[in-house]
View 1: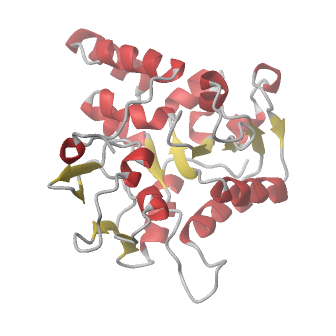
View 2 (view 1 turned 45 degrees about the horizontal axis):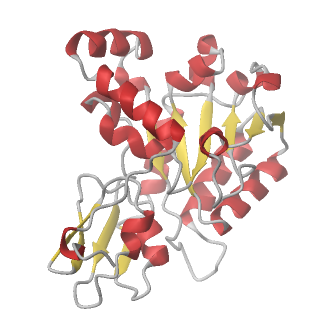
Length: 277
């Protein structure tokens, strides 16, 4: 443990993709560039864009397979008319040594059907069964699913005209994932990615030993330590549940106030995109 333990902060991930994105975000914050960027990326208004990590360890009942993240991702996979799976671009670029690049991104809808798959490593049309199996393997590998509906994705894949018919499920690691860099962007950008409503993360100070394991896995700058005790920075925490998974003293708890929040999350995305095509 660092001798500055009481001031422990989450590590910066100096991967090539992280550094490139951090530099780009710095310039986007300039007033003139920010306006140009916002007009280009959000021509129909920022409210059309949305993203959310799905907690990986909230049980919905007495059976092991009744887990919140499976219910959410399975809903969209079963609804999708077209499904494309590809290698994780973040881990591929960073040369990740901790997680399989094949446990990458799932894209759904007519926008996915119009992609030029030859341009992206591992990209192929997938069955629903294959997509659901990817979910299982990704969670077993310690990855966190992030739902996304972003114009930037449509622009990257050359299918802007199908922006409202494209949705993603990215499976993010704590070492390479570009999602963590939202904290460097302008406020409008950061507002797009937020915690699922009703999800709460708490740390029991009586159980916390200050070991710092949670800091190794948090990618949102959602933790702080004072007097050898960790606490949550609630405005930054995305409720993904990584910290609960790694805490050796079981000091972290992730809960949801009402399972009707699942319907709210589903509705938020379905208001913005139609992936049935």
